[in-house]
Image (cartoon, rainbow, N blue to C red):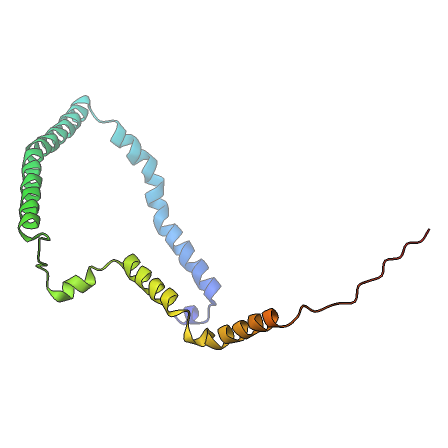
Length: 159
C-alpha cells in the first residue's frame, strides 16, 4: 500500500491496466472454445428455438390484429367528440370565449399592420420631426432662391 502512494498517475494507470489484462486473460482464452461449444448444439435445440421465435411473432401479430379495431374506434369517438365540442362552442353571433382568451387569439400580423398604419398616418416618429422641418426649409429655400450660376468652364479649341 505504501508503494502505491509514491507512484505517479501514469505509473498507477499502467499498473491498473496490467492488472485488468491479467484478470481478463483466462476468460478471453476460454472464449473461442465456449463459442464453438455453443454452435455445436443438436438439431432439436435449433428446432425449439425456431418454434419459440415463430410463436412470439404470431402472438405479436395477434395482439396487433386485436388492437387495430379498438384504436380505430377510439379515434372515431375522439373525432366525433371534438366535432360536437366545436359545433356547440364555436364562434357564433356572440363570442363565447372569456375576454382573456379573446385577447390571446389575436393575429400578430394584424397587430403589426395596425402599428404600421398608425405610423404612416402620424407622419413619422417624433424624433425625426426636427429633420423633417430642416428638409422642408431646405426645399422651400431651393424653390425661392434663384438658380445659382456657376462660371462656365472654358473649352479650348486648338487648331
